[in-house]
Image 1 (cartoon, rainbow, N blue to C red):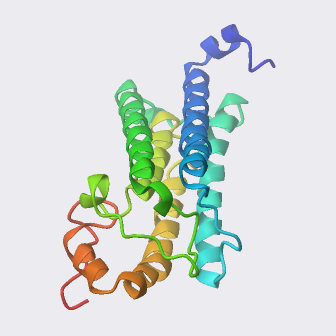
Image 2 (cartoon, rainbow, N blue to C red):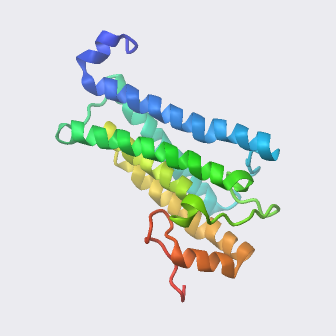
Length: 219
């Protein structure tokens, strides 16, 4: 079986879609975490990488959930490509495929724009020794965590492009992991660092989607 043979891919259209999903995901990871980190390093002398990421048990669990969801995102299309899995026919439609491509494109653009907006404030985790400015303009005026929104969107896009039985698990685990990371790790840190400024910001801007996840005035 030659998965790199074009005729082999054409015999099973779902395999071609799986190739597209893997290629787009690789492009997303390369641009958002590779190229953007290089740009940040060149402009700020820091890539934003935090040593000792996952200092607490909560962070470790959140990171594990993210990695598992990443593995499912990549593993589903790979298993379809090798013939181990097949997409669920009832939801393997051109309409959902088109939606997946559109969501992927929007996620890629919004993720890159959000990272560029953060500039030197981007970090791969919490660095208590280096407080960064609160970014609240651009996409951050619409949602507090647009990069995380982008990550969730890519997982949903893969589930639409290659709808296997395991595909829905990836966005669910990603949302749970990122909710843990933001609610229990990052937001308390930002509140301690920026005080009333962050509280006021969180009261008017949603966490991952506009108008959803806003803090209450008594929260």
